[in-house]
Length: 272
Image (tube, rainbow, N blue to C red; front, side, top):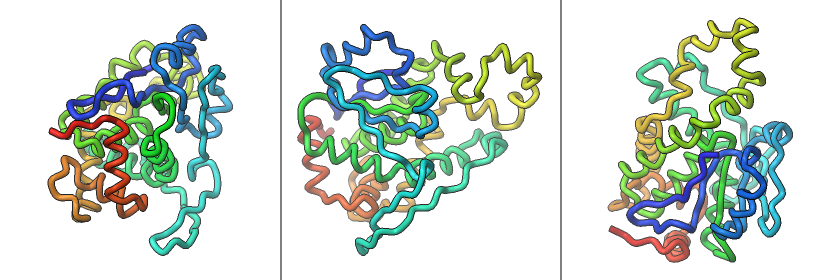
């Protein structure tokens, strides 16, 4: 579901893949992840409860990696002095907030929360990309839009992808999830569309912000990248298409410029 190679004018295809949950993929197609696309490592970004409802499929020759986020329990993360401190779970964004100004501020807050709850997981994925190894890497969440979309944007930004291209790649999810709309409805609301109608949920589903939450707009990811620029854009990274992402990579994740150079080399990045 919603599977595609992560690519841009600076990032060749076939190195990194993104998708939604793989539970709806037929077994013969799952085997092709290895035999056709040489995917050998999958990072599951979902919560523990999501994995219980829809377990990750077992694919011979492919390793599935799951690391708990802060929404799944206590996670300790080193501060700037190397001291291990407990990470707190950020508050969720009220649904009604997405109805204000096309939801730009609400999406910015949502993706900021994901960066906080999944930062240590994203670092592990980036370390895997940096260190290389056999085969390509795939990462996914449930729909393949938000947690996956944030990580995809970070990878593309580190590869010097133009912001407009990052936004275009992000909204491809509109197409990718359309055939699985009913499945996703059941995953998020715990019942089918038909049962929801029978339970009289139509009014609630038409409430403020619900429609905006279901849409995939360029402004959602671009607003998030703008926020990163405001927060980390001054960390000696002038000249980058997304300076805030590079600043986050260095200042928050503890990487060095040499790590970014290794990632570029592993992925065959071609700077514009």
